[in-house]
Image (cartoon, rainbow over all chains, first blue to last red):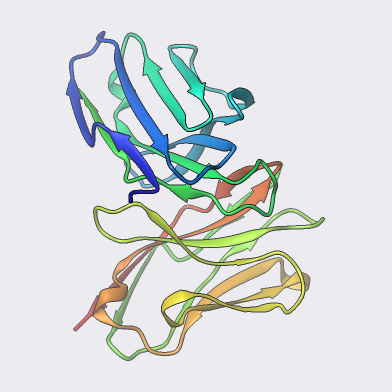
Length: 114
Length: 111
């Protein structure tokens, strides 16, 4: 009965490769997010989708492309991976995009770029 | 733009000690504030949140936080910590639907 799930949990890859991370939520929420946690554990939002529409797009290299096939899924595709992309990527969801909504986080995907 | 600051980078306590973790935010308007906890190797979990009303909010696992508007603060407290409270604690503010996180405070509780 996992609420927000991500696959894979770990991802090790070479520089220059393209990789995807998948996220699914079974909470019936309308809004989903991607956050990046760097090596110093600082968390920063990357994207947010509300009902399959992009609503937040922070200053993220365009090598990162989110895709939401339906409101229960938000995938993150990364092209031409760089060393600096190594981080833990967290998916989250919330009932709506409102400021009072609690965001529920997935377990994270640890990406290591060699 | 709103920012959130956590001044304690690493706190080390013995079991049964009292805990207070500082959090300050920069926004002067209506704020929605959260504390999340990240246990080692796990995802972030909500401890408590404040939107309006009683400035003293109670959360899970015996945690509470006090919103002090005049000080732009939302400090997290627990009267008596346990070894199992060892984790990373994040304060966050919701700005326009996105969470702005503080730098995090690592809490280590010695048995």
